[in-house]
Image (spheres, rainbow, N blue to C red):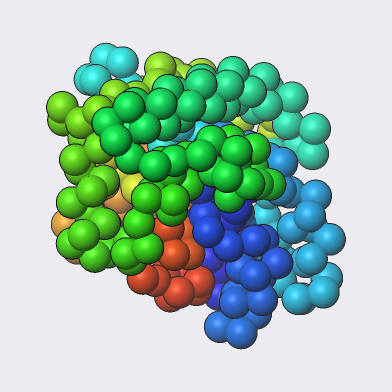
Length: 265
């Protein structure tokens, strides 16, 4: 078993189509994969059709952009193996996607007003098939520099961080509601990269609502994070998962299957 349970595609903020990702996964010996595109299950039907072609088991997945309002922190909640209709997940995510799109349009307007040359229609073409614009799509039209380059990071910081003209964020879903929706749809709710977002304190509270897993293997996790995840998994009987958090050229230079899940789900 070689499972990469955390990959993204052009259905959200990944640069590559699901078929390209599946092809890359096959070339690298991945046997189980989950596309956890942000706040959408739109790509699942296409991924399932490609499963047989590339002989890779597909696990239905999603990554919900949520928030811990008690501690004032972002929390990402992964959902796996939910019912095919995913009515509860889609219900809470549809509004989130609308907020994200409206905010992205506002960001583009602010960047244009600051003197940069951008075309909303051209950015929308880049954003397809997701039909939701992410910051990565905007950056794609601002620079050809690589995501990991100093030039890219500098421009991103100037525009989107601190006092940048396009800084700020949307109102996220409560992490408790995200877990409830996944569980209501028969899925396994998993806290994503808790070391990256410092989500450890929240986990016991989410367990009470049906949280079933915690992500151990992630690019941003240290040996200390692995120990913390393992301790929480043992204490609360949680499944440990993992993956590359692959975004193609819109993310760090990591290949599909380079980081795998410690368990199959």
